[in-house]
Image 1 (spheres, chains in turn orange, red):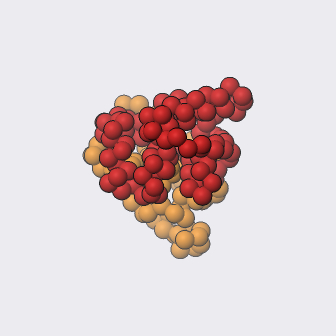
Image 2 (image 1 turned 90 degrees about the vertical axis):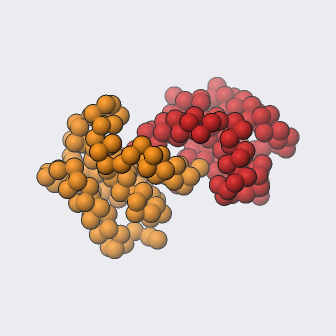
Length: 111
Length: 111
């Protein structure tokens, strides 16, 4: 699967879904581009969610949802750390077991 | 931390440690280079372990050990899949709980 208008729309829809479940009303910019160091990142300065092009092209929708949720929780809790506020917000959306399953799937795509 | 002779030696030592714990006697080539798509990979054809330069530069030793172990288990069980043979071999080295902890740390460095 290569980046095309269909999966740009798919990502946009996923971002909207995540925003809605986190009660985020601000406009979030989305960039899909090759990234050497990260799967995804969030810039607080420009309110931009950056997604690794390879990941968008190759990861299933449930994994992408999880990754986008993770980034936007950083935005919501206004911290780049995986602190207690972050963990508590994540727990509202996925149980620890489901998080593990998804994280395992992500890892197995990378090693 | 940038790639230098010290951390090349550190990686070589980690690979030897993993080889020894897996009873692998064959020579394993090691390449450390920028990788767009993976943290690490293993080429069966050339018996080469490839490690993402960014990961070598930024990940702690326990995470690197886990990643190298993962790749060399693929070599040992002669499969690129995470099948039962793979899982059984991994279990000999780390409990499921420890695997989760390490995988979580890896993920948190990437998103």
